[in-house]
Image (cartoon, rainbow, N blue to C red; front, side, top):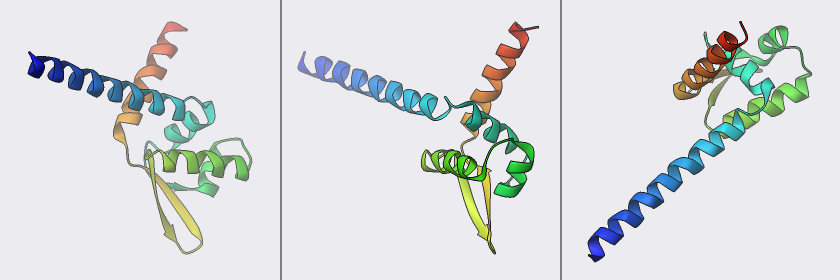
Amino acid sequence: MAKTASREENALTESEEVFEKAADLFRVMSAPMRLRIISALCNGEKNVGELLAEIDTTQPNMSQHLNTLYQAGVLGKRREGVQIYYRIINDRVVTLCRSVCVQIASESD
C-alpha cells in the first residue's frame, strides 16, 4: 500500500512540475513583443538591427525582451564582431505560437 501511495505522490509531483514549467513558458510568451520577436526569428537568426527593421520598438525595449527570451531558454545567441545574432533554440515554442496564432486568426475571419 505504501508503494502505491508513494507512486501516486510522485505522479502528482511530476504533473505539478509540468504545470509549473508550462506556466513559466506562458509567462515568457505573454508579451506581444516577444511573440513578434519569435515570429521574426522563425526563418533564421537575425541581429538586433535586423529585428528593429521588422519590429517597431526601441533598441532598449528590444534588448530587454531578447534577454528575457534568452534567459528562458527560448533563444540562443552568438557574437560576430560587434553584432549579436539571435536564433530560436526551443522549437516547441514556435509550434505553440503558430498553433495559437493560427487558431486566433481563423476565429476572427
